[in-house]
Image (cartoon, rainbow, N blue to C red):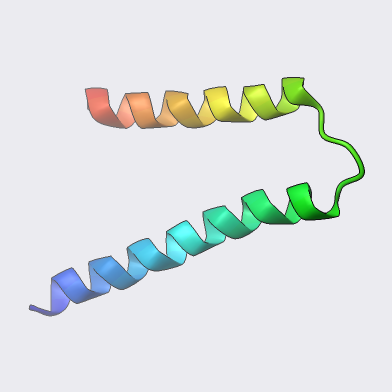
Length: 54
Protein backbone atom coordinates (compact mmCIF):
# COMPACT_ATOMS: atom_id res chain seq x y z
CA UNK A 1 0.00 0.00 0.00
CA UNK A 2 2.88 2.38 0.74
CA UNK A 3 4.69 1.85 -2.58
CA UNK A 4 1.87 3.18 -4.83
CA UNK A 5 1.58 6.31 -2.68
CA UNK A 6 5.33 6.94 -2.89
CA UNK A 7 5.31 6.36 -6.63
CA UNK A 8 2.43 8.81 -7.02
CA UNK A 9 4.22 11.49 -5.00
CA UNK A 10 7.44 10.97 -6.95
CA UNK A 11 5.51 11.30 -10.22
CA UNK A 12 3.90 14.54 -9.06
CA UNK A 13 7.30 15.94 -8.06
CA UNK A 14 8.88 15.06 -11.41
CA UNK A 15 5.98 16.45 -13.46
CA UNK A 16 6.03 19.64 -11.38
CA UNK A 17 9.75 20.08 -12.08
CA UNK A 18 9.28 19.50 -15.81
CA UNK A 19 6.48 22.07 -15.93
CA UNK A 20 8.60 24.59 -14.02
CA UNK A 21 11.58 24.03 -16.32
CA UNK A 22 9.28 24.63 -19.29
CA UNK A 23 7.38 27.65 -17.96
CA UNK A 24 10.30 29.67 -16.56
CA UNK A 25 12.18 30.14 -19.87
CA UNK A 26 8.95 30.90 -21.73
CA UNK A 27 7.83 33.49 -19.18
CA UNK A 28 11.19 35.21 -18.71
CA UNK A 29 12.64 35.23 -22.21
CA UNK A 30 12.38 38.09 -24.68
CA UNK A 31 12.18 35.89 -27.75
CA UNK A 32 11.99 32.18 -28.42
CA UNK A 33 13.88 30.36 -31.13
CA UNK A 34 11.63 27.84 -32.88
CA UNK A 35 14.64 25.72 -33.83
CA UNK A 36 15.76 25.18 -30.24
CA UNK A 37 12.17 24.55 -29.15
CA UNK A 38 11.74 21.94 -31.89
CA UNK A 39 15.05 20.33 -30.90
CA UNK A 40 13.96 20.07 -27.29
CA UNK A 41 10.61 18.59 -28.32
CA UNK A 42 12.40 16.08 -30.57
CA UNK A 43 14.67 15.06 -27.69
CA UNK A 44 11.68 14.57 -25.42
CA UNK A 45 9.92 12.49 -28.05
CA UNK A 46 13.07 10.42 -28.50
CA UNK A 47 13.24 9.65 -24.79
CA UNK A 48 9.54 8.74 -24.67
CA UNK A 49 9.93 6.58 -27.77
CA UNK A 50 12.89 4.73 -26.28
CA UNK A 51 10.89 4.11 -23.11
CA UNK A 52 8.03 2.64 -25.15
CA UNK A 53 10.35 0.38 -27.14
CA UNK A 54 11.95 -0.90 -23.99
